[in-house]
Length: 351
Figure (cartoon, rainbow, N blue to C red):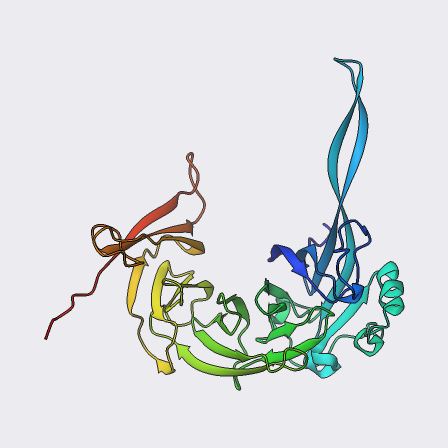
């Protein structure tokens, strides 16, 4: 029997992560900070089945012989040292279904900084729940799989979309501060997206629905209060999973794109409210090309005529959208499509 290969769906380099105390490499820590427990540092975040792993990047120098010149050459390398694991389980286990595993060296450092040890959960040896099994026979161990995860630098929260249909927000110490879930929704989440402000997010459901949320951070030190703003449907084929969403549309991100297995790229009003049954536009519709990833480039220029931001000399914004997906490719592989999008300037009527 072949060994089980972990399912990896998320990877992100995080520039600043606070809450874990000073770095193992003290040269990385900010020496000007008076409180070492609040030092922010760069980490690598990866997922594996029902776990999130946080790795510390430790630069080091390695010396070797240069045979050609007969000299000793110094090369720079980066070592990865795991500092935290987040184990996601059923909500009935308590602690928001998030259990923290810390490296021994990190536990010692946190204790020296007199951090709140109550937040470091040590009773992580738990059994599997006997409730509803997400995934049926394909998930015999009833794991709560991580299908997407993303850290937001604006609010220092890690969002995790899970196979049980919940989206859990975790702070820098690994504490689950909020659980986002619609009543009666038993389908798994496939992805989600933050906006730039960290005050809004969108969750993608396997049923083809896009859910818009607002996030109230309060004083930034306690629980986070989410509110469901809108349920978007009708743009994608019913029952076909969405694979992602992305906020876009100038500085205020008035728009949001969604894409999925049906080969459609839909454009919505990101400030929608209530039940929305159709998108503003379907930008791409190719049933033979399921879309797995989308990115965009927005070019904002100043008009030579009046200096207004957001319009070039021809009077409209220019954007480029990259769409990747498809099925098994032939000799040339699977193509990635680039689309130019032009938004014309609205006509103004002088009264």
